Structures are given as structure tokens and as C-alpha cells.
Length: 381
Image 1 (cartoon, rainbow, N blue to C red):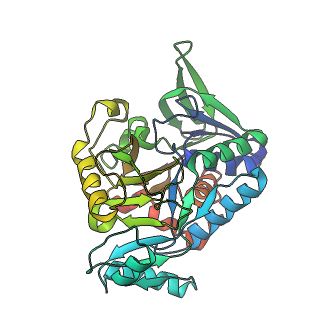
Image 2: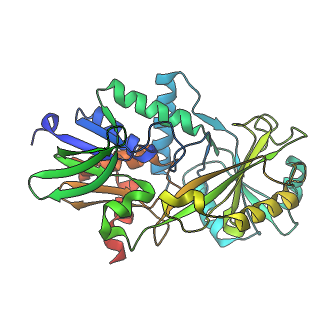
Image 3: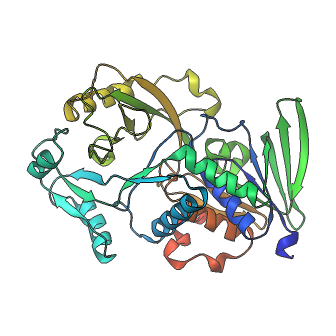
């Protein structure tokens, strides 16, 4: 089939689906992006003002290199700041095998990094208080992606290239071998269901993916993650005053970003949370997780007001069994991108490229360094 005559639907207007749609539009494909909620909204996993970008913590750098290049190119097109370099500290004891492994990746890739002992951390970052048995790997290229600007920039570019965005809830997806994909879409404003047909479909529906594709139900789980913001009366824990991203998820389940999006508020997150139906997220209590974050703030960021969060928000993680995403074709006309386990935003330009290539049957164009074999559904069988 001629590429220009193809019709492709992408289900899910978060950052993964939006990048997949943009790549398809850049290839000249007639593409429709379907998102169930009017945008912008806070019900999925791509909302808010910030996401961490880090080189340290990856086994390969190709997907991150490509993604950063695309973010920076999008900055040039839009004239907006999408990425702010802050540096990143990844904590662990000296000789920590995981950190040694990740530092080796940076060393072999010719990237700067540094091991900091606890006294160096205390001297360089006096707003922090960590135990003497902890050091940290320093990644000077870590930084913050301005999430809402990123999502808006990708979708705006998609529309400029002739893409179409529909607001409606996809109720079912039926792959019909050799004839395309039939999609039923419910529209809240008219309370009707419309049947749409496309040659190919890409499903990037986050925590709603398993509901659309039952064959994935046993593999995916959805976690409600608390996102807390803490007052910084001293003003010392901001990007401008040199606080980096704090990545302590392996040891404590916690990571944090300096004051940037909300003036005078530091963002702290628990990397996990209670398993939750995404349509019932507001009924779930996550107080124990917020208490853990509060304890962490009290012990390690003593200049913050640790009595209670100034702002409490939530995000959804869609977890896979091995915490790596599933990026694969599950029928000749149906592709999935799901299970990003809280780490999908920074890679999304590369992931979108992979999903678009799979949808177009151009698997061989996916760069070898993207390691597409690592993300196939077959690995669970």
C-alpha cells in the first residue's frame, strides 16, 4: 500500500502517542490522534510542568541522544524553552554495583560524570543532608523537561503537518486481518458512539491499554503515584541556586526536582504507589506513601517546610513485569506502546519513532542502538 494513501490512528494523546503521531505525520501519513479527555488535562501520565531527563541510569545512550536532539530541535521550531539542564545526583554507597555499571556506560560513551563522596556533596550542595555512608554519581547533563510545553509543542507541530485530533473515549479496538482496524469511539457531548476504520492503529493508552486489549491484562498494572510539593522558605532549593535533580529511587523509592514549575516549591515523588483503576483514582488513599516522602524531606532537605505538602497531585504509572516498556506489533495492523513504568517521558521522541516505524512496516529503519528486541511482547512468553 502506498504510504501516502495509508490511514493510521493513534489512541492516546499523552507524550508517547503524540510523538508517534508526529513521526507518522512527518512521514506524510494521514494520521488521527484520539484522546479521551479534552486537553490539557491531569488524568493520565503526561501532565504537569516537569519530568526528569538523565543519562546516568541507562544501559545504552542511543535512544536518549536521539530524544534530546528532537527536544532541542522542537525548541528551535517553537522558540520555547523545553529543557533546563540542572545536573543530577544518583545516590548509593561507594562501590554500588548498579551505579558502577551506569557510570561505565557514560565512561564508554565519552560522557562526563563524577563520583562524589559524602563530604563533597555536603560542601557543594549545603541545602542537602545525607548520611556519610552515601555518596552519589554526578551526571552534569541531567535536567528538567517542561512537560506541558513539551506535549503542547509536539501536538501543535502534528496539527501544523495536517494531523487530526479527536476528543472521544475509545470503547473497543477490533483488528481485522488484511482489512484494517475498526474502532468504536464514544463522544461525551453527544452521548453517541461512532465507528471509525483505519488501515493501521497504534495504541498508547497508558493505564487504559489493558482495558482495550484484554490480552495484555495479565501483564500490565496501574499505580497511582503521589506527586508532592514542599515549601522552600529559604529559597535555596531552586534551579537558580543550583539544586540538582535528586534520584534516590533505588534506595528509598524517592526522587525530587528543584523548585522550577511552582515558585518556591520543591517537587518530591514516590516512585510507585497503590494499584489503582485509572477511572477510580480519586477514591484511593495514598497517605502511607506521602508519609514516606515527608520523612525523606525532613531528613534530607532540612531547609524545606516538612510539616505537610503545600500541593498534592497524582500521576499514573503503567507497570510492566520487568519495568521495561512493551513496544511491538501484535497484529499486522496493530502496534502497542505501553508499560513505561514511570520512565517514558524522556525517551518519548525515540519511542514515537519506533512505534511509527512498526506501524508502517519499516522495522529495519529502527536504529540498532535503540534495542527494539528488548521491548518485544514475546519476552514474557
